[in-house]
Length: 249
Image 1 (cartoon, one colour):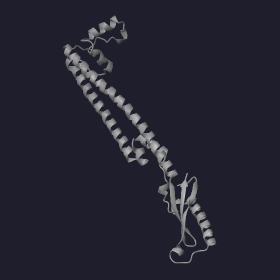
Image 2 (tube, rainbow, N blue to C red; image 1 turned 90 degrees about the vertical axis):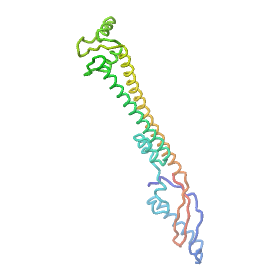
Image 3 (tube, rainbow, N blue to C red; image 1 turned 135 degrees about the horizontal axis):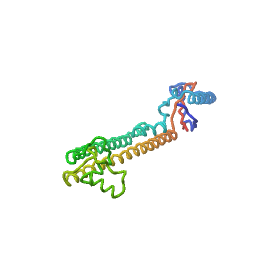
Image 4 (cartoon, rainbow, N blue to C red; image 1 turned 180 degrees about the vertical axis):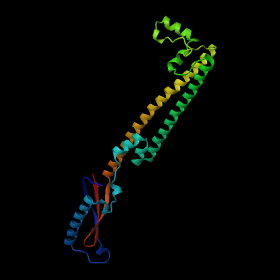
């Protein structure tokens, strides 16, 4: 991992191993020279190969903010998991499952009701279903016969909406009750389809919000890593240990 810069905060202590284990204490000039050489070596090792020090590379690694955003934008919760927040990952992933379940529930219910009103139109109004658009079914629920419909359109001078008086467009309800039942089924189907569209909007919002949240978590993680004071060990040529504190930015 590339370290942009580092600040050496200080040396906690210097322990000559020879002194600890009964050996002679090195003189001041040797300690000073050893300290200088070790600082140089330790500094070079941080710039070139951080894994060679006692600080592991994984300790310095922060999640990418861009990756976190796009992971969650593609699959809500994935970016949060990548950024280290399993709790938020579960929340957004559960929301995604709930939203898609709701969407398919509305679509399935709408299909059921659509099948019901189309079958009712065949058995109670003699409708030929082939090639009919949605507006046709809206029209037949408001008039008992095709003749009544065409007469109304002619009075309104809406000549382009008049149906040819042929078997293909023909309908005639057997009763007003059947027609009203057809209307209820058709409205229930359309309402379910419309609600499914709102759920799609919620799904899109969930992806965007999850992406933003994952970016925030990754940024927070990076800032915490940058502000963290780390401890490292460096050996002295004269046989000692140097404990260092440093902070990366």
